[in-house]
Each structure stands twice: as structure tokens, then as C-alpha cells.
Length: 392
Image 1 (cartoon, one colour):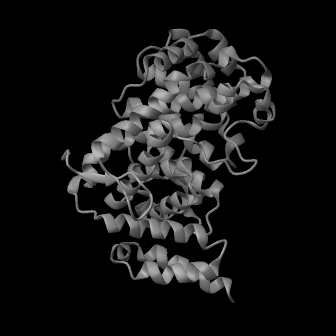
Image 2 (cartoon, helix red, strand yellow; image 1 turned 90 degrees about the vertical axis):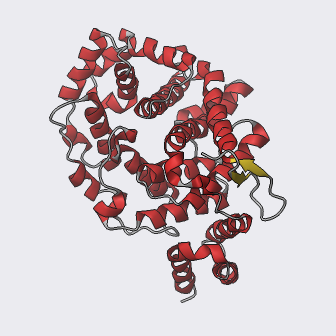
Image 3 (tube, helix red, strand yellow; image 1 turned 90 degrees about the horizontal axis):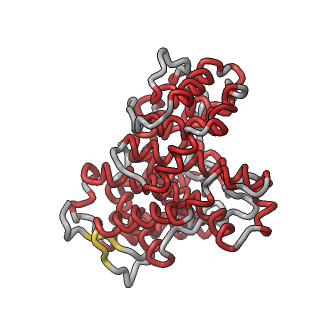
């Protein structure tokens, strides 16, 4: 990658400070990884002080294991203390033996065992316990949980379980990937579901099927581009980065979109040193009981509870972007400063249209007259259709 390639660290159209692409990506990947390492004590499921704290730690530890699977699949390392904690817990009988009586807990515990096995560090007892759970899992109990089934098929696939009992094509047909959602109508829940389907459809980068565009016939690229810009407009780095990972795995993101994501995230990292989550009212990344108990936590653990998920997703995005950045042509240097402003105008438009169609109509006129936006005309057409339908 050309060291002189520039992106912009601000999010406005003026006074934007140029930043080298490599520097922004390195800072982003390093800071999110360090965030996890520096707060490793809160991820340990064996150090909980209450039942609610236990549930929070178990969830976070499982998600940290997903991060490590992405890292293993892309030949990247994680911090030594996270690696060591994962190895210790995976091989502890108190961690893996409960799977024998409750194989439905594979999504909660399986990622930790899987990433440890991928490193050839899983004990024989833990391996036997996990394989017994994989054998015993009743998939019919999960047939209404499409994304969960895709997650489990990924575990079977990466474990090398043959034959894989989950039919990916049949499950995918029941998912949100085949629905008629668009960039305006997609809820936050559907947005995350779409990202997770992509994670597991491509086995967290471990192996690849055809892109979802080809499989579903849906313009997945347009949808992801629009949703990424929409959540930049909202100010939600967690959603933006989940969608970015999904787009990279599907090989369907434009260099401009990757550039604006890196630029925007770099501006956030430079401000605080890590990623602060955008929280929607009562919505939270922790289990409800843990949220209710958070007031009793230390200030440091409260901060972790609010922001750990966004930094884990940031660390995963850092792994994936670092692996594929050269293939995305971000280094071409062809994305002008005013192009950044044009895309930010689309982001603002997408954030506005649901709340104020009349205001969005005026914004749409301005955006359509900008030279960079022609590539994203399908997104603008979706906005126009929404505005028209809202005034009927």
C-alpha cells in the first residue's frame, strides 16, 4: 500500500485533516485490541460476583472467542492475556463439562472450545465433551432460529464435523437475506441479523460461498453501502463496523465506502483512544439483568459494560480490513476530498428521511447534484420512493 495514500479523519466537509490510510487502520486495529487486553479481567466468566455479572461475562467471553476465531482464520494474533485466558477456561472441566447435559449451550461455550482447538491447545477431555455435545444437539429445537442455525453450522464446519447436519441453502432461504427490506425500512435488529448472517454464511472468514448477491438475487452491495452510510449518519460505530465486516466478507464494498468508514472511525479513536458505543435508550449489549445491576458496578466496569462490544467488533473489523485492504483499491488515491463530503451528505440524508421526509426532500435535491453520488443512485432512488410514499 502506498504510504502517501490519504484519508480524512474528520466527518465534516471542511477543515478535514488528511491521515495516511495505513496509520488510520493501524491505530484503529491496535487501539481496539488493546482495549480488550487492558480490560481482560471483566471478560473472565470465573470471576463473577453475582448471577447477573456471570451472564454478562459469559456473553462477553463468548464474543471475545468469536473475535479470536476471526483472527485465526485470517492468520492474525490477539493479545497474549486473552489467548491465555481462553486456553485456560476452555480446558477447565467446570467450563466444558456442562455441555454434556445441555448441548443447546453450544453457541455460548462452543466458540471458546473451537478457537482453542484451532490453535491445537484443547485437551482431550474438552474435545470429547464438545464432540459429544455436537452429536447430541437436537437441531429441530432450533429450526425457528435461523441465524442461530447458521452460527451452529459454522461451528460444525470449522470443527471439521462431517457430514455437516445444517443445510446452509435451506436455512438461508428463511433468513432476512431473502426478505424485501431496504435501507430505509430495515430495523436495527434486521441490520444486525443481516450482518451476522454474512459472518456465519462465510464461516467467519474460514471458507467462502458465493456472495449473497449471487445467491439471493438481492442487491446486497447497495443495501450494505446504504446501511453503512445510514449508521454513520446516526453515529453508531458498532452497526457501521458489523456491516463493514459483512461487506468485506461478501467482497462487495466500494473503496469509497471503506475509506469513509476508516476516516470516521479514526476520528472517534483519536478523540477517546477507543470506541464509545452508541446506545439506543434501553437497548444494550449486555443481558437485561446485568443492565439492571450496572449501577452497583465500579465506574471502570460500567464503562466496560457499555463499550466492550463495540471494541470487540472494532477488533474484528481491524483483523478483516487488515487482511483485505490491499484488494480493495483504497490505495489508489483517487477519492477526492469533496467526495468524502458527498458521501457524508448521503449519510445525513439517510439519518433524516425517516424522521422528516420534507427536510429529506430538500437534502435529496442537493445530494443528487453532487458528482460522487451517481454510483449510489439506487440508494437515492430508495430515499426518493420513501419520500413519495410518505406524502401520499
